[in-house]
Length: 260
Image (cartoon, rainbow, N blue to C red; front, side):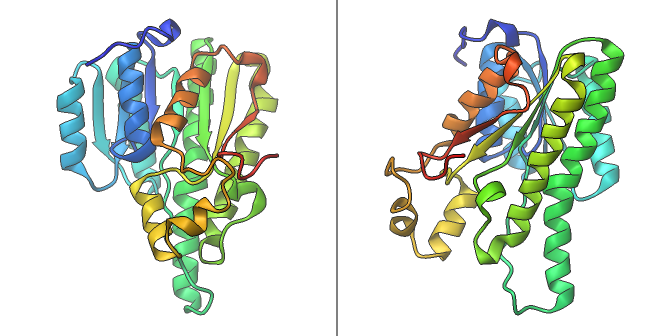
């Protein structure tokens, strides 16, 4: 495993990453460990993948637990296990999300089920984890960082089949901006990373089912999709505290497809 000496501030820090077994979450787990950080992450279903990642990176530096973020008891348990693992948490990365299409002409019950799933995982779980983290940081009297993975959809709106995801991510924007305003004086820092189309399994499923890559590439001035490492680089930098005075900010990572 290679070492990353660019961020010495992260060596020995304890990080919680939600949805760390694949995509952006996996990239963040790998990159944090390379800096010398300890990373606790959750997965919802892919236990083999998570076990392999922990085995590869080492159980001294990584640990994982199964937790469904749609269930409050699992969210509470995730936080408790993460804190107990190394005795504290310094950085929380709210990465996990659900993104499933739902047409307008389905039954009210099915529409409600999709909306509630998106809100529970993409907004309510980050709200609980942020609340736990704020109490934890205040009790320890130390700097803490909370990062939210949001997206251009949170500002410009989402595609018709994904309205619930855009609404939930918009709520996440407001949540972490409010935390920044309320707790900057306590050195609790929050940041939002607004990604465009990032080349992950989740995004590829949407692209393939909605017209293919060319349709989406046409709206990206850079002419390419982002990578998980593009986002992970931002996560690491923001976690160092070097951008302290930018707390509450949103960083666009969209290949210039959406700027605000």
